[in-house]
Length: 286
Image 1 (cartoon, rainbow, N blue to C red):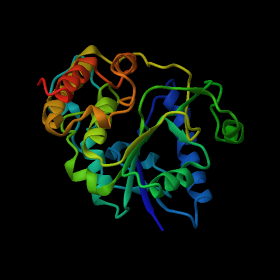
Image 2: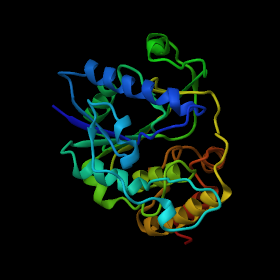
Image 3: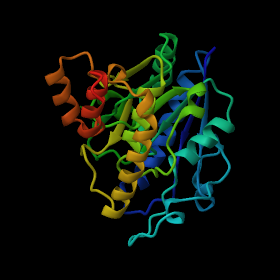
Image 4: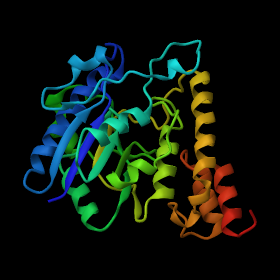
C-alpha cells in the first residue's frame, strides 16, 4: 500500500481575514478525504507552525517541530509579515514522516473527498511528481457544515499552482532556499524544481480534486518589497537548476513553438524570460 504525508502551514488568522473561516474547512476536508481513502492508501496529516499557532492545529494532525526562522530574519521590510520559508516546512515533512510520497498545499486549499484516492491512482500510474490545480468556488462558503454542498460544486478552473505531490527521493534535490510562502514566486520556484528534477511529471489542470473559496485568480499582492525579495530568490534558484532544466519536461512543451510560447507567456508560473532562455538551450544556441 502506498503511503502519503501531507503538510500545511496553519496560522492564527484575523477574524476579518478570509482564512479565518477557510482554515477550519480545509482541516475538515483533509480529515474526510483521509477517512474515505482508508484501506486504499496510508495518509498522514501534518502541520508546520510557529509556536504561537500551535494550539490552532487540530488534534488529529501531527504537529511537527515548531518553525523558528522567517523572512524577517534575513531582510528588513516596511511591513512586518512573519512568513516562513517553504524549505523549512518541507524539511519537517521529510524528516518527521516516512511516507513514500509527500504533499504540500496552501492552507486555504480544501480537498474534495476523492483527493487521496485519486492521488494514489496517479502514483500507481508511474508518476514521481505532479501538480493539481484547484477549483474556484464562491466566497459564500464559510462553515464546515457546508462541505456537502461544496462537494457538489465543481466551481471554475484556476491556472495557478498550489498543490504539489512528489516522491520523497526528490526532496534532497530541491533548491528552494530563501523562498518564503504567502508571496508570489513560491509556486513558480516549487513547480520549476519539479519540472527539472522529476523523471515522470504531469500537470493535472482539469480535475475536480482541490478547491479554494473565492473566485479571484490573483489575490491582492503583498508588499512590493516581499514580492521583489521572492523574485530575487527565484532567479537565484533558476540559475542553480539551469543545468538540469529542459523545456521538453515542462507542461505545454508538446505544442509547436509559437503556441507553447503563448501558453507560457499567459501563465503566471512560466516566466517568459526563463522559457525563452530554455528554448535557446533546447536549440543548442546557449
